[in-house]
Length: 330
Image (cartoon, rainbow, N blue to C red; front, side):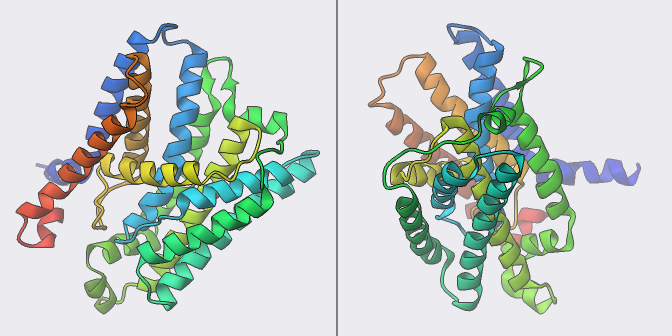
């Protein structure tokens, strides 16, 4: 028996959450597509992909922090701030658009850096820190956009929300690019492995010489960056900016749901952003199924809440059966 053959049970356990989320998404999307009045057309697929991609980007941002045994309740508000800012500055010619995009991404990095610095050096709990910072970010968004409005370059927005060759949704290409150029390099880097170690057992990681503070800071930094990309993307979808506290809170909650559905442990140290992506796509497809089957809108939040509760319960059930956290990785 080769080393690869001996290791496959470990790899299967390691990626079980991702595989389950992927299978769940495929089943749900097949039901959705087969029952949609228009069938699975390019436009139907693009609309579903755009909605799913938006939540998936926010879910990746949440995953990076959750892996360190933290939580970022400001991701939705960073997205809203980036949305309001993008609706003001991503305009003009190619040079102006590039500068505007850079400004939006720099703002996301600044928000993530602020969260990381307060958590690390202020020694505050992540949940308290990000609730407070989220309020600040929303206040800034409201100052930028007291009322909904603004615009974004149509060519740029079409490049992110349209179709390639009339078939492939551009949003899926964007999502794949984020996985290839942000998540995979991060996951395979020393700092990415350190984040997993910190989430598994922070004290043991510190005693082993793992750069705990740097791992946390980079996680929050990238979380802010990805949330700003989500804000830029929602601007491309809506062609406007809106300081909506409801949207910010909703996407924060949904990102946590996607993380759990994707097999990422809320206790940290276990899971993958790829799993969170499929969790996000699955959670979005649940909403689409409710629409297709014409469930009363008054009952939809209740149904989604039940799904979220069951997901969190299933995600925590395994921890109730272990005697030692190391059993989670054995």
